Image 1 (cartoon, rainbow, N blue to C red):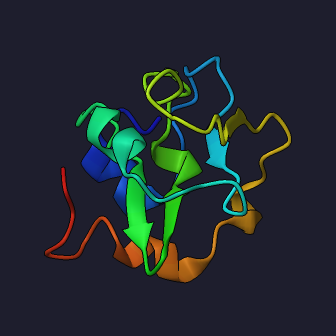
Image 2: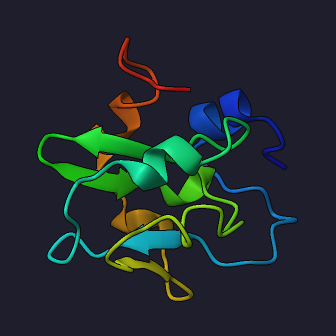
Length: 102
């Protein structure tokens, strides 16, 4: 079980106890305001700027929904069909970089 953020980053696994699906950002709708990034709890620290895009790393996202009400364009959606193979490898460098906001 991946209980801490550091462990989830290391193992690239979601906490198996999380009942809600991870969230995803529809990049074609996103206006890059970073409100979601600022409201993602540091315990999860799932939202990052990736170039011009804002992305959610599903293994770090508990589906807590804290980012939903602050999004001015409602571009964040539950992703019940998420599959770990869908996350690009380069996203995993974001939590390990000096720009990790968490």
